[in-house]
Amino acid sequence: GENVEQHPSTLSVQEGDSAVIKCTYSDSASNYFPWYKQELGKGPQLIIDIRSNVGEKKDQRIAVTLNKTAKHFSLHITETQPEDSAVYFCAARGTYKYIFGTGTRLKVLA
Amino acid sequence: DADVTQTPRNRITKTGKRIMLECSQTKGHDRMYWYRQDPGLGLRLIYYSFDVKDINKGEISDGYSVSRQAQAKFSLSLESAIPNQTALYFCATSDWTAWNEQFFGPGTRLTVL
Image (cartoon, rainbow over all chains, first blue to last red):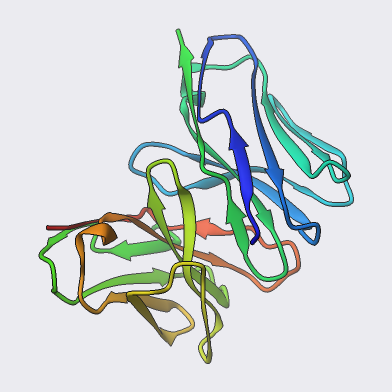
């Protein structure tokens, strides 16, 4: 069946360093790839997304890259700050629904 | 005010009890979803609805049922709760466009004893 693999499950970085989270999807029909940030006690919130016709997208310190051939997409956070600490989920949207990755707990150490 | 609200936020119940979780949205979206979140498993889709007359099963619908009472309301029921349904439940909405961001509610933490 359709699935999305996400790595790593936990990631600790020093404040100011970069963080990279990677996802691989199985459904070649997937055409939209959002990334969500979930803070403690809250629902996931979209932070950046990418369509299948684009290879890279950047929004300030956050960027996402997509390799359709390899079915890989990645989230890059530069100059990490303590408020970036959260759980991050990738997702792949197929025909009607989203398949989510299992999440990455990012800790930014001050 | 929040665009997607869920009630209750926390619930503790006993095995065998019937439980209803409610979701309301003010975003005017047609599409609504119920997800379950477990540690290490991410978000898994339980049911989804594209309009009031359209209800579809997700990947883990067994033991759950839903009701779309209106465009703005989508309820999830556990007919006879069991301990392995202890989880965090999220409602989400999206519009009908091809690239549709999902907006999530704050979640309901359900504990079944």
